Image (cartoon, rainbow over all chains, first blue to last red; front, top):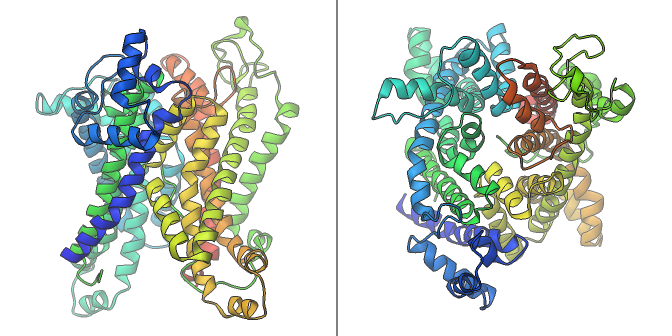
Amino acid sequence: MTAYLLRRLLLMLPVAFLVTVGVFMLIRLSPGDPALIVLGEDRSPQAIAQIHQELGLDKPLYAQYLIWLDHIVRGDWGRSITTHQPVAIAITERLPATLELGIIALLWSLLVAIPLGTIAAVRRGSLADQVATGITVAGVSIPNFFIGIVLIFVLSVSLRLFPFGGYVPFFQDPLESLRHVALPAIALGTAGAAINMRFTRSSMIEVLNQDYIRTARAKGASWRRVVFGHALKNALIPVVTIVGLQIGGIIEGAVVTETVFTWPGVGRLAVESIFNRDYTVVQGIVLLAAFSYMIANLLVDLAYAWLDPRISYA
Amino acid sequence: MSNAPAIVAAQEPIVSTPVAILELVRGHRRITAAFALVALLFLVAILSPVISPHDPLAVRPDDSYLPPLSPGHALGTDELGRDLLSRVLWGARVSLPVAFVAVAVGLFAGGLIGLVSGYAGGIADLLLMRLVDALLAFPGLILAIAIVAALGPGLRNAMIAIGIVAVPVYARLVRAVVLQLKQMEFIAAARALGASPMRVVVRHLIPNLLNPIIVQVSLSAGFAILAEATLSFLGLGAQLPTPDWGQMINSGASFLANDPWLAIVPGAAISITVFSFNLLGDSLRDALDPRLRS
C-alpha cells in the first residue's frame, strides 16, 4: 500500500506540473498585456512598471512561470483586481458556504440514490426498475440550473415553503441554515443522485449474482438480511469511487447552482470574477478546483484499495 | 455534468467490421425511439426557418408577456413580445451545431492523440497521456469556464472550450481500443504483409474504432449541449439577442414570479434534447457492449 501510494504521488508530479502550466497560461492566453489585465482600472505607468517587475514580464516565459509558481507555493495567490483583497483570503472566506452546499447536496444524492438503486436492482426488470432507470437518464439530462429555477418557482415563489437566496452559516443557526440550503442542495445533488443510483443498481445486481449471496439464501437468511446485511455493503464499494470524485468536483457543480440561488460561495465568486475580468481570482479558483479534483482522485484510489482487499496494485 | 468515456469495445475482442448502426436502429425498440427523437431534433433545426411562425428576433412590445396558447403564439411571448415557439425552434439551430462542432473538435484532436499514443507507444504515449491526465485533472465545466474566461465570452469560444474538454475523453477511448487492436492477429498479418503504418491505421484501425466512437459521440453531444446551455446561461456563451436556450432561461429567470413559462419552455427544450442524445448513447452502448448483449 505504501509503495502504491508513493508511486501514485510520483505519477501526480508531472500532471501537477502541467496543471500549474495550464493555469499560469490562463492570463497569458488572454489578449493584451498581462499587466493591464492584473491591474484592471489602475493603469498608471508606475503601476504597470511595478507589475512588469513583480511578474517578471521582461523575462522569458519559463522564468515568468517559475516566479508565478514560487508565489503560489508560498501562499501568495495575487490580489483581486476589483477588491484588492488577497485571492487566497477571498477564496477561503467563500469556501465554507460552498462546502456546506456541496456536502448537503451529496448527502441528498446518497439518500435518494442508495434506496432507489437497491430497489431497482432487487426488482430488476420490474416497473419500479424501469421508473428508476428513466429517472436516472432524466436526472443527468435536465440542467441543474433549470432544476433550480423550477424549485424556486414551485417551492419558494408559489408555495412559499422555502426561502429564496440568503446563506446562514450552519453553526450559527443549524435549522435556518438547512432551510436555506435545501433548494440549492436538491438542485445541485439531483444529477449526482442519478449517477449514484445507476452505480448502486449495477453494482448491486453484480453482487446479488455472487455465490455467497446464494449460500446465505440457502442457509435460510431472509431476503432483507441478505440484501442489507450482506450485499449492500459490498455493492457500495464502487459507489465510493464516484462519490469521492463528486466531492472533488464540488466547486464545479457549485458554479451554476450558486449563481441561480445567489449563494455566496466560491462558484459565484468565479462567475463574478469572470465578468469583472478579475483574472487572478479566476486563476486561483481554477487552480483550487483542479487540485481538489486530483487529490480526490488519489484518495478514491486509496480508499478503493483499502475497502476491497482483493484489489492489488502491485 | 458527466463527460465520462464510454469504452464499450475495449473490454472484449472487437469484431473485424463495425456493427451496422442502421441494423441496430431497426432491431432495438429503445434505439429506434431514441434515434427518431434525435432525427426529429435535427429536422427541427434544419426546418426552423420554414416552420417558425414568426421571426425569432422581431420585437413587438404590444404583444409582450402573452401566456402559452395565445392566438398566434402557441407558447406565448417574452418580455419584448418575441414569439417563444419561434425562438425555441431557432434555438435548436444554435445548440445542435455548437454541440457538433465541439464534439468534432474533441473527436479530431482527442482521436489523433489516442491513435498516435496507442499505436506508437513508448515515449510518445507517455508524454501524450500525461497531457491528457492534466486535462482530466480539471473538472470539465471549470476547464470550459477557464478557457472562455481567457478567450472571451461568445459562441465560437464556447465551442472551442467544450471541444477541448472532450479531447481527453476521446484520447483515452481511442488509445484503449487501439492498444487492444494492436494485439490482434489481423493487425499483425497486415504488418507482416508489409502494410505501412498509415495503411494499418486507415484501413484496419479506424473502421474498428467506429462503434465505440459512435456511442461516445451520442453521449458527448448530450454533454456538449448541456455545457453550451450552461455557459450561455452564465452569460459566457451565446450573446443577446441570439435565440439560445441557455440564454433564454437566463433572461426568463427574472420573470419567474409572473411568467414562469419564459424559463420553463427553453428548459424543457434543453432537457428533451439532452435526454434524447443520452438515451441514444445509452441504448447503443447497451446494444454494442458484448458484456451486456447476453
